[in-house]
Amino acid sequence: MTQEQRVAKHAFYTSKDPGNQLEDNYRHLLGIPGARHAPGPVKLMPWVEPMPAKKAVAAKKAASAKPAIGRKALSEPAASAWLQLLKKTLVRYPLEPAEMDLGREMSEVEPALRSEIERWIDLNHRRQLHESGPDHAVRLEGKDWPATAETMMGLQRMDHMLNCLLDALRGKIPGDLAEIGVWRGGVGILMRAVLRAMGDTRRKVWLADSFQGHPRPDPRQYPADRDDPHGTFAELVVSQDTVKQNFDRYGLGDNQVCYLTGWYRDTLPTAPMERIAVLHLDCDMYESNIVALRSLYPRVSPGGYVIADDYGAIAQCRQAVDDFRREQSINIELQRVDWTAVCWQIPEAAAQG
Ligand SMILES: C[S@@+](CC[C@H](N)C(=O)[O-])C[C@H]1O[C@@H](n2cnc3c(N)ncnc32)[C@H](O)[C@@H]1O
Image (cartoon, rainbow, N blue to C red; front, side, top):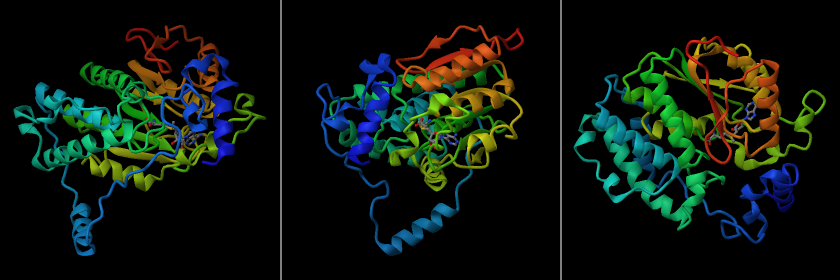
């Protein structure tokens, strides 16, 4: 990111949305006092450890023969231990020493997945120290663009997401799980893991993204997006191949994970999912949020959840959600998840609205 882009990013998150000033986490990019991180470029660690060429070929062959993901539900203790570990690993939040001891609960997890888990616990432990240093609050709150974590969401929002997913599945709320704004895929990975843990082989995880970043603002149609800089940030561009590799790294890529690749205006109105149990909107711009809501909200089942990640942090997202709720006369109370995300649950008995 150039200095000019950094200035634009800072200006966007502060002056365009003055109420968001206290939440601004981008000061470190400009070296402004109050920074949460030391100024300076983030040092990236490569995901794939270097290995000799011969070994790399063997590893490639092994990776292409993906083991099938187990179909039987895990016991409650195994599911809970695994999902807690996975969630913290995806966020790069420090693990308690006790959590790193996989223990008896994990004996139910198939050996391939178990060794994967052991591997990423080890990697996570090293990475989290490297990445977040002593300031774990940043990853608790998810106010940064982390260097290696598969999600920008902080632990608090991931906790809430996990609760919504478990609640929807336990409550047998009909429908698939939809991640609108995928980035590196962390939330989708958690969604797929919950299906695995509960032995749900029927529902799909839908991942909607351009996989080339945000669209150019269209201020004629969506004036709120005028000056939106998201499309200029290279950090926000993550390819579909990278997301697929991230799923595979956690042993969770299979045909229950479906990709909706392209701009939302082209993909979402005709997206082939019928019902949705959990709809997660994490796509920053007015256009992206309003298109997603208009296309997908009618498919959210009674009892299902709608989560708008950027409501507190980004004025355009807030405006899109508020406009849509007004447009559809939705009076269901908005629940605050953390400093930015909000959520509402469609009442079970009532028709939407
Ligand atoms: C903030 S990131 C998503 C973060 C992710 N949910 C996580 O947990 O880390 C926003 C993503 O939305 C995508 N995006 C935003 N607007 C879009 C649009 N109109 N069409 C397609 N993709 C879009 C971007 O490519 C980017 O990957």
